[in-house]
Length: 204
Ligand code: HEM
Image (cartoon, rainbow, N blue to C red):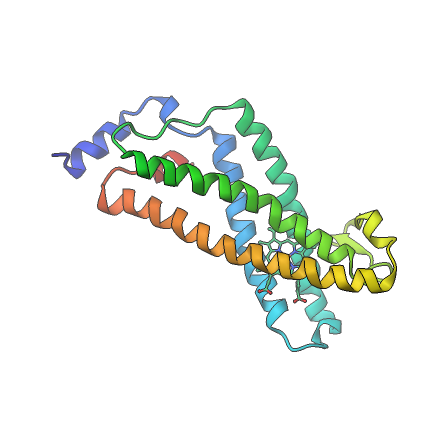
């Protein structure tokens, strides 16, 4: 039976190939922190009573949310390019088949959601009838474009799409909470119950 000591020592002696690259670690944690921050900002904006969004302080919350979301989209593109050119370290051979399959499925779902969250948010924002009179500035630095073909639709269609993309953005956020909970639970199970850390491979 494996003791926590033997698991520790086998890991500290791990070859470099047992860890993610520095770039992968940096992209993983920056995307994770920015997405968590954006969930907090998005929920703050969504929970406010109707009408308060025109308040200048509240606008700051939602404008920052949009800027962080677009940043996540850029980082997600970099991350996929990095992932396609750098193989991640394999999961430890002693993990049962079902756990490997579950981890793999959660990772694919997270990749999909890392793109789906910013894209549905951007679509939702582009369909906002007041988008043309409220340009979006990325962190107040320069104007960020809305999606042109949506902006050019008539007001009634935009209103309808605004609602539908908003509902899709919210649905994706619920999926994110679920998959993220499984992902974190898996990492903590290996850390504390199995005493075979995989978290360490993703640490700087
Ligand atoms: C990392 C990416 C993103 C995450 C994790 C995220 C998360 C969220 C969450 C959790 C909500 C609240 C949903 C609810 O419970 O109803 C929300 C709302 C919203 N998000 Fe995002 N979002 C992201 C990107 C974006 C982007 C890129 C835009 C626009 C360019 C955007 C625009 C909005 C808007 C307009 C709302 C509605 C706020 C309101 O109720 O008035 N989001 N987002």
